Structure formats: structure tokens, C-alpha cells
Image (cartoon, rainbow, N blue to C red; front, side, top):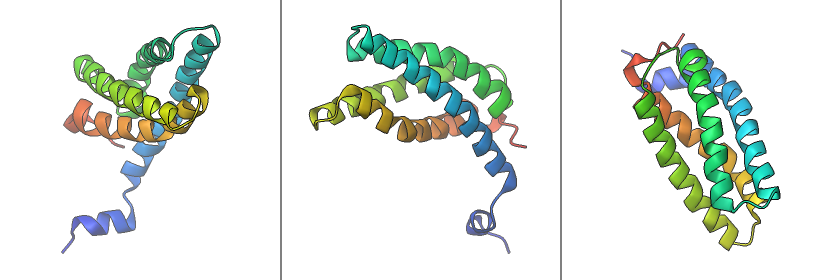
Length: 136
């Protein structure tokens, strides 16, 4: 008799491949989004403007890579935008908290990138693409 714990214990190759594809696409998106954020911040933009513009620039790229390369599903742009908006709001709150804790905005966003990416994966996997996801 199999149960969910066994699948996690023995590993599910398809899920690991999905996570790997997400990670690779996410690295490119994170680098691009952070580059836009840092460039705008260095040019004098406010942290909020730099974060929003960096996120929007990354979102256009990320929707294509996530839908076509990672989850292999088309459409769902509205759900993707809703998830991105929620992740952006969470990112902004965490960036402000880290800044108030003494980190500068460059350091704070660099530290937040990985946990925010993890939250984004969960949102995309289960809310955006959900049952439409072709895992293998």
C-alpha cells in the first residue's frame, strides 16, 4: 500500500525535473529582474518604483518561460498576473522589513530573491498552472 510519504521519500523524478526547470528559468528571471531593480535604484529610482518595474519586466519574460518551458501549459495569464501581484506585495513588505532591520535595499533584495522564488513556484505550481501542468 503506497502513501504520499513514500513518494516523497523515494523521490518523484517528474516533480524533480519540474523543479529543476523552474529553478533554471527562475535563475535567468531573477538575474534579469534584479539587474533591472539594481540599475533603476542606482539611477535614483525609489525602491518601490525599482521593485515594481523590475518585477513587471521580469514578469513578461517569466510568463513565457514558466508556461512554455517549465509547466508546459498555455494561457492562464490572468492567474499568473494575480499570483505575481501577490508575490510582489509580499516581496515589498519583506523588503521594507529588511530595510527597517538595517539592511540596505540592494542587500535586502538579494537575500529575499530565493525565498520569494520559492513562494512563486508554489503559487505557479498549484494556483496558476495547477491541473493543467504537464510535469514530465
